[in-house]
Amino acid sequence: VGYHSVVPDFRNFAGKDSISFIGLGIYDLKSNPYKINTKSIDFKSQTDKQGFTSSVFFTPYGQISTKVIYNDRMEQDGSTIGHTVEHAIKDKKDYKALGYIFENIEIEKNYSGFEIYRDFIGNDGACIAFCSLSASPVHYIMKELLPFEQFIYQYHDNPGMISGLAEKIQIFLDRAVSIATDSSAEIVFLGANYDSFLTWPEFFKEHITPYLKKSSELARKAGKFFLTHADGENEGLLPQYLEAGIDIADSICPYPMTHLKLADIRKSFKDKITIWGGIPSICVLEKSMNDYEFEKYLNGLLSDIGKGQRIILSFADTTPPGANFERIRKVAKLSREFKL
Image (cartoon, rainbow, N blue to C red; front, top):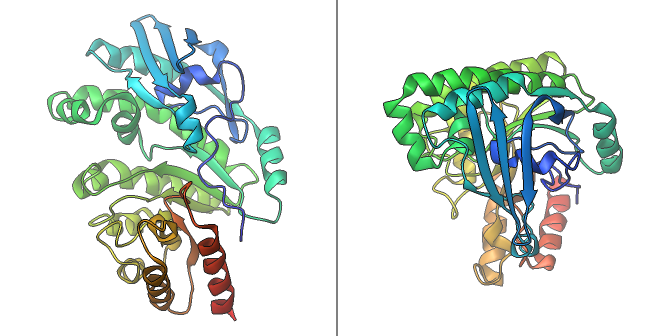
């Protein structure tokens, strides 16, 4: 079994102030190829006993406040990423203030920290350079800075303000992607958590595909593979992954957890995109599948992958805490036998 480290440990903060920036969608981690110079931004932050981190950022255009929760229950459940309970954008004036933050925040190389992460993985897995959970500037606003419903209203009512802020966020993302592609990583990771309802095909084509394509081309020129975390309902989105030129679709989750079957996804990808995933996580949950159903599903899945090219079998989106470990062993055993 390979060491699977695609999505990072979001509690592995680079410094004491790193937690303050989570509400802005900025994950300043020890394992990142880049780091945030927090001295470039005026802010204050505190975390209370209930796990709420409240941050206030001061700009010439007003204050931005965020609140994120990460408590003991979330840690026990295996999550390392907090939940935003107060988003950054609450008023039209916040767009300009946020634009100031993203335009002025300093991003520096963190290759020494990244090499420690690379050495830790060694030959047990692929070393991946994390850029952002957002695949593009507009996706960033949708995913990190507004509740989804409010984003939809803003997207239709204030498109100029959305595009204006996106231009400032692009400065931040461009720098992160550039540093990542110049690192020693084998794979560059940008963007996660798409869904045919939330990031519908027309939106994806206009606001996500072009930036993914630009980033994938940059990674390829640097001799690296480009990965995006496509773990949701992908009906209608597969052509966009092809257009974007990505090399790896991570955590592809097929039927019965989504509408698309693995064989159909592989057919759509036409041997151009490697699937990392392919096994729905409910397979290892005895409450979701009994032993007979598990064996039947797994045998069918192994038939669907044909010659086994361009697929790295793993549990999508992730191995759940209640997984039956013997089933994980079974998948590993059948995978080795398949190769033989």
